[in-house]
Length: 184
Image (spheres, rainbow, N blue to C red):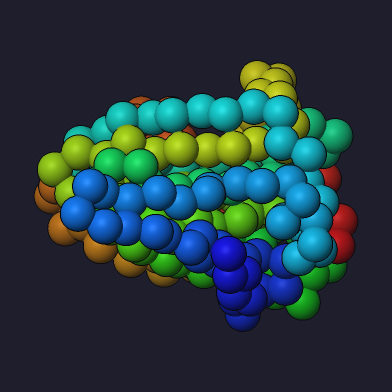
């Protein structure tokens, strides 16, 4: 397993070793001992799956401290464009984001620490997306940032007329108006 640093400290790309032959493939997507040896000590306690069709944009979501969640995410089926935005007050990279394509083919994972807003768009006909979280979902701690916040300028890789966004996700505040309690 290879851990690749991004331009934002603590935000990692995870590339599992894939063993394939004529029968298919095998890869280990999580091993606590391996992650700990690489300095990643999250204790994951909840796994989620979502299925979405082409053009769906989910996000940008987060949970407030002390219910914040680090996430290890991947596309089990299909292809998504995954985005993490630093929302830690006082962070030198506050408001910066990293986007990466995750797919069934590349088996790449994205490790998003607590203090980040997260979202993704579906680039394939359908996608099944996996989230491994280090804290339980708490509805009262839920927060969000407008997915098309003009200050973030995220290109979701889906033409505007094909974007499918929930009504809830169109009502989130912009980054400058969001209230968070993450401190760097």
